[in-house]
Image (tube, rainbow, N blue to C red; front, top):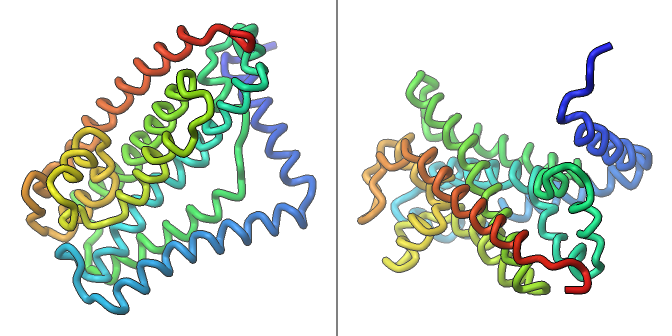
Length: 269
């Protein structure tokens, strides 16, 4: 009989979470519809803007569809995988985080696999459709160059947002009850990533381009796919350095996480 793998406990927890959600079909269907409505509303904001402005930051509506699809698809996937880390303050205040320390498994991976909100997949479908439509309207050909760029952007864009969720969770060990502050880096970063960075003043270009590099998740790949030059400080060729940006954010995330878990003294400390 084969021995269970190291991931077997996590797989068992995730399977139980999914069964629990699917055991109430009506409630699950309503949750999915609500998630779809949120995604459509977010897209509606883009449509309203371009109903009044034909070009924003050098991008037309077709180009912004690509930007919106790329950035939100990466964030949506990260939100599915890591978004529930924003419940960490609840565990800290209730003292239930101590139970994670008692198990012979890494605390971060336990938190990562403690929940899987399937309704978020509905948003990802909307974003994927938006991306495909945007690429088609922008006449982006599916050659090897563009396929590789889209793949890199979606995969490592997801990795960047996952790292931002870890950074935000790490700070909760010190802030305890300040999710609004840390959400400015996660959900605020998602909003910034779906905007043409050319409209940002220089300080924000530096912030979202290099410190919290969310422009790598959508804006820079859009420029590269459409052969646009890009604004000052953010040339289009930087899109190929998205894996480097992802590595940078994860290094910061792991340092903060290690610092935070060592700072934690338990429910009473």
